[in-house]
Image 1: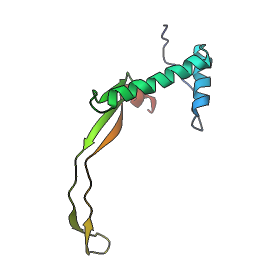
Image 2: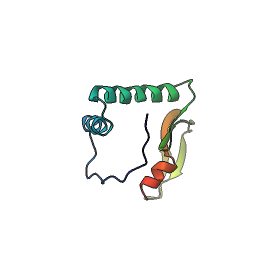
Image 3: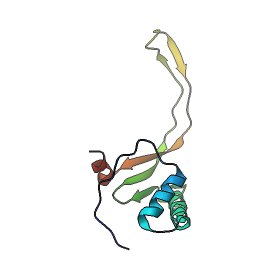
Image 4: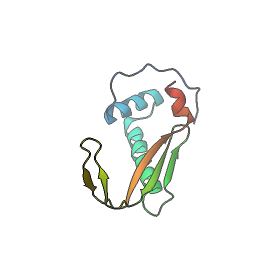
Length: 113
């Protein structure tokens, strides 16, 4: 597997669809579209295996991003004063939940500079 130096690419005006992404990756790597689609699908499976319940909880795509499973604790019902009207309102309780956070790594941060 040959790695090349990062190259400057033109900015896109619209987001790519999955089909366009597969076609672009296929063209730039010389791999068949079927193989590129299989790699993307397997990447999704790997992410799921890392962040699902009772798993490690994080997935890192080196140099680009880290996906983290975060637990949000339960919140009790409470009363508060509405900033708009000044009257007391009831805020409903919320059960504990799990959130997914995607954090950029240094390589991704450099891309937007």
